[in-house]
Image (cartoon, rainbow, N blue to C red):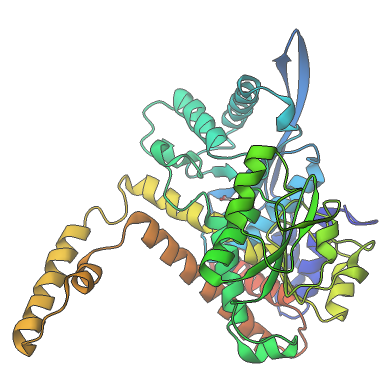
Length: 471
Ligand code: GLU
């Protein structure tokens, strides 16, 4: 929650603001904004010698495309408003990156660290059973995925539970994504959100004239970056930006506090250090600068809040010194802090764009599941032989030889992870170009968030119109 208004209301406000730059009829905007279906569940689980009543939700925000899609989070912050807001963001996210799904989200109000693996498995399986009972899960209905506090392990439990009830359903493996690779998952899904953040940032940084406006040169190399949260999204964003983009990571924040080093922090080594010691504090060459929110206030080119919502609020917005904020988490900036940052000239890459990599690769996983084969399996050898034939002909006709390494690169088909990453990169780049185009067309739109909402709204509205529901 942000000050007085709820998280869901703040998403609605952003949508209303964007809608005012379009000619979408008011009634249609109201339909797009509304949550279509909300499931509130209470179920008991045995914990030690007692029972505990677990509070859980699944919200399907929009049925304009099916299935609906979105993660399931395990966090103490979970309540109906939060899940509704996150489900709504999924709708705009999917539309923005052309993933043909409606938005959904699930949440279980627990701190997973307080339960044993066995108890977590019980909770997950019971939750899945409730979803099955209410027809809230299925490859053509609603497809969950990981979110804060969940991962491939939970997705494997969900799949197994679903299959126990839907034995023989041919597409059952597509009932959930983000599964382990050995359980019908797809390579590249685990790091997809962080990798997507990297591709989105790199694209944004590639436009010299846009960067000049915020006092930056073009390109990621050498840019200073601060990351809050070393979970799946934050750690992969930091690692990939450092290893493939040559970004200089100068600050990291985690539950236990914030660290800083003007010379840069080796993220891979830091992760190993945290695994060993349980903390980032004390990592050689870094300074302990305060609690988990201290790093947010560091002077840097790029700030990546990758933990939970409500991190940049009225309380600290004034002290933020970053030039670009990439909202890797969902809702890290509260609605009242957003205008303060914009006024300071901060370029904000909104959550439903910059963290869309996860659902994009979930879509690839779902496609793989429904097609029942691995991408490339059918065509790789054929393509290899055809390309080898062409290269041989080229050699014959030119009298020149192509070296073995080059030949190998030019003739082999992509591996699964290469295809996934290239599809992900293309998705993030194309979506950014659409947002940028919208900004260029509307001189009255000042921020990326509004422009991105305009893109999503137009696509969803056109879906409704083609259904014949709205004229
Ligand atoms: N939970 C992720 C998100 O917020 C991924 C959703 C998905 O893969 O369906 O986008």
